[in-house]
Length: 598
Image (cartoon, rainbow, N blue to C red; front, side, top):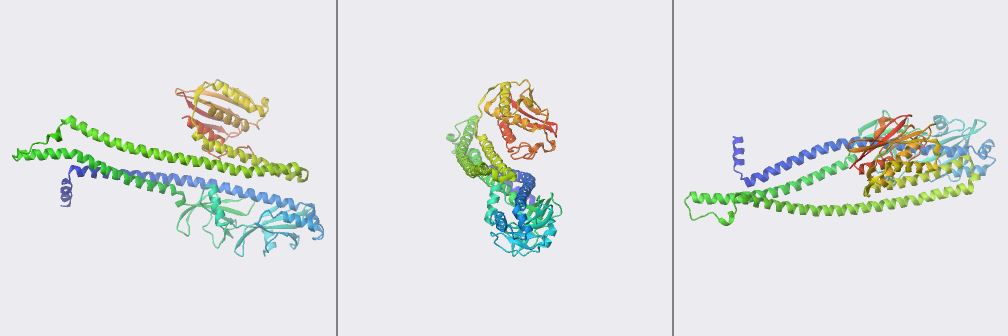
């Protein structure tokens, strides 16, 4: 009975009502299916990317903290090795006291160094830095026993909660003839403000929970305050941990040992933060679906009315005639066209509707284009501002370092010279990195200027240009026959410069470096390649070669900014080509790129 009633009610609907209802149903079903399918696929992909980003960020953060700890150890070791400090300890603080205090004062690199003391071998303090600001009561015997500091060495101890603040010690042994005669105990505060943490998150481009934990699990801190209990339990490092925090949010975390310390760094991402973009996409899908349904219902109503109106008029006229009312003639003005004419008229109406919709769409496209251009201009201005703001302190660092080297080189000593050299080198590297990133960001706006390129001549010029600053006779270059191609010569030269320069760099440690530049002809494209017999790489990590800052070799092995191959990939993709690489560790690598012939 229910089915018959529903069928009866639907059958009573007119065509003018059925058509909007059908279109609305189809649009609603399409939006729901499309929205859910894309949401779950995007959610899955976003979580995978988020986990990869978490792994990468934790490793980089642990490495950075380890490097900082190593730097602190080297500085304190240098102080402990000073002759005045040794003689002061041997005299139990009676000799070279002023010089020793000055040396301890210099260890206060910033306000986080709150206490520096010199202890004799019986762990009795004999000299304290004048810049020390606090008194910390800790069992020094247990502290030194835990860190197991040996002669001529330093250790960064575990973190301590002292009166609601977090500190960690740096224990340095002072030795005489390989025998420990005392210790330098430096205490450093770990306390960041919420504002500084927010600025850090803005700088690295992520929002996460960051913790430091003692490897024995005795204390946690979120870098702002000590924590009374651990947010979650760490079973293994180097593995992802999933848990629900106190706020009820689902989190993914990863722990990593920090080199040169007794700490673990733990970073946790929330699912909500990782899925912000996906949730925004769902909102847009819902909004677009509502707009589409409204437009569809309106368009269907108008269309069905235009179709049914003449049919209703004909039906009314036919019924009047059937009832014998010959005084109700068919309105000729309404039907002055035959069937084809009526179809053409309906088509013209449809064209008119489409024209109006298209005109409205063009206006929206122009508006969106103008908005996009404004955003691009703002991004360009931002990139320039960031570049300028970064270069100013960078120039200051480099300039002061060069002045220090030139004016005080004789007084620096071997270690000081090495540190100054590292500062200057890293400042130059940072400047190059800024230039590479700006070039990478500007490439998207640059238009292609296609001309016929003599690839043979271009490859020779690139090789000659790169060998001007190095020994030409060391490298065995072989440039095979390279067919010409129509492309942007400036960009393709940049591609060859980066690939050939990489081949030179990664084969520089070989006794007989060989580099081949060749090509492979295909029906619709030409494949060029640069091959070397250098360091090569593990093919398991080939997918990371062309990402920004993705390097398969350390900075100590081979210098580089990590942007060159990403720039090459963007240039080739701008030419509608492809780029890939093949390699074997310690045997060499080959980089291929294809360019279409038309």
